[in-house]
Length: 439
Image 1 (cartoon, rainbow, N blue to C red):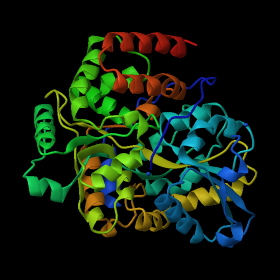
Image 2: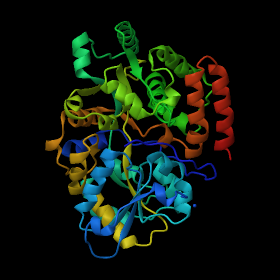
Image 3: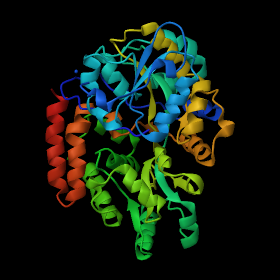
Image 4: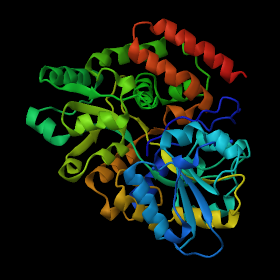
């Protein structure tokens, strides 16, 4: 699902786990199988009687599944659980922006969140409940990579994976076929295709960065393709300088693409950008597979993707963005036992099968999930994830939340508006990075 950074400038994170292990660990699992002072009016609360009978008391679930498709899919999962669960749904961006105050105040028993660094960050603050005992029961259905992505800096598990999804360049097959476009594999081919689309009257690249996070995917891919996965992860950890020539070259290459991108990206949501792809007004769109939520009927069958093109042969296309979404139990949960029962259920193949029937824009994490019902896009996603040498969790999940939200969002939006002062931009980012990472 869509993910945006949390505003947590006053917390200190634990050391990063530097991303997931190499994809060979995940391959088997994938082939075998995404004060919180929010006014009550913002939260969609559903009565437990409407969400299953169950014994052991009501469990509250704080959900950021606010878009129509995932909201409906999650409700169907809970309906089939046999548990008494109240779902409190909050707008996705609002949820992320207020997550720290939420966890400090009176959080729900279970809440939707992200794997890796983001999970570790809150676990280290005592905002999450240790669910290592849950993992003793569900562990056989998960690869070691998923377990590591669910493990805190203290070696305990705090997270249950629910689904994951790749970021790639999405396009309409019929549009490519009608115009004789070929899939680009290199940077030069990518730009040449964009130039051809522009000549054909299309806006080559859809882009909507109103929420601040979508453009991060472009930065991540150019950096990993140009400088490699290891450099990218060190940069996210604050161990490399943003004034390094390697980083400036990332922005220089990105600047080459901007004439082919939708103008005014900072005033457009990702959904609005996706609708331009649906309408065949744009030719390509770099986003997570959740973009499929905006397609329906025959349009959905027409959606396809290709990996972000290679820039340096030394790194090729070996790195992939494939964030893992799931659930955690809050540190202040009132019904811990009920919350653990719910997490065991959400970790099951049954729950994930039900979810993906309504939201087939992700890939299940449970190795026993029914992949026979996967559509062509899901099958292709499994192949892409399984073949990747390195997997990143996305910029705002691979670095400190405060750095992502208070520095990188405004910096990338500034770049989109004014891409000519790369030196000044990198100098400002580096100065703020030093202040945050040494505080």
